[in-house]
Image 1 (cartoon, one colour):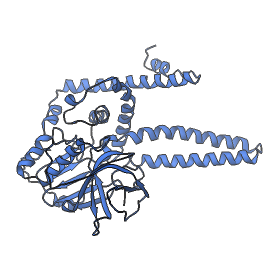
Image 2 (cartoon, one colour):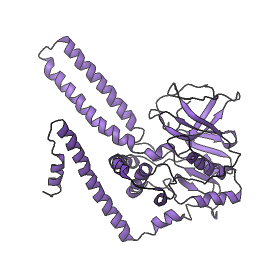
Image 3 (tube, one colour):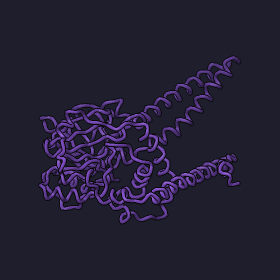
Image 4 (tube, one colour):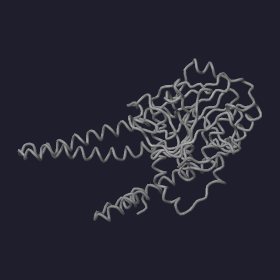
Length: 395
């Protein structure tokens, strides 16, 4: 079974074992190994949960025919790009140094042990470089998002998996569970089982992720469940729960939208993301995530702008025709959050753009100061912050 939602960055390149069984202690097979699962709980898609409905800013398209959500990995989009590039530069420098050292010493007939040592180090660094490039390929020159589309009319779910292929699930055959893995946090996953009722034949995750199996996950599951199982009254409730549409099916997100999405999942990754002003409570820990959030933002910009917008096949689109007069089409009738963004005057957008640039410059100085501090601890005077001051003619 393919790891379906990017929980394993190498999901495109390897497969896990088919035919693992589901029981009370249920473990998911990823990349040929069983990943321990705790807090396991089956969810009943026929039973209503008396909880709030949390879209969590995952809605790309919404109408009476289908609802399309972003994939699970969208919340951390940019992390792999930023960190893999960082380590790729370091690894490339080390690899170059090893090759240069080997080339200089080979004419001097160095000891065999030293030559073998350099060759082994070079081989290991080459493997590391290839691994980092493979990691980068999961976010660069791929798709801007991996859509999950729920069709109320056909009762089908169309999922573009981490291996870039599209799988089609029958909603009525899906079973859902909520669980936490030791590495990936908690989420809700839909699975299909073979005739024996035990063997997993397919899997996908809902986009929202929490630290553990929590009521927040049920809020998100109920949002999806109500859309697929509810009547017209419930459809209206689901629609009213949405404040933001993320229309990346038409165009790439803007730098400002990338900034908001990169930061909001770190500043407030657990509460109701449709209402961040009410949910976000800044504290001393907020400052600690500014650099990781900024790196994620830069990585997200690079990742999004080197990727293409995914498209479903013409056959799938034919099954997802929308009534042109559909009153529930939120891409045509934007919800409250998008209306607020759309109606901002030009001067306000300009101010936001200037502030974004200034914030970027400030973060450059913060990063330079951080590097200088590390250098000072190790006895080196990197002077990076001073060089930036000179670059911006501040000294």
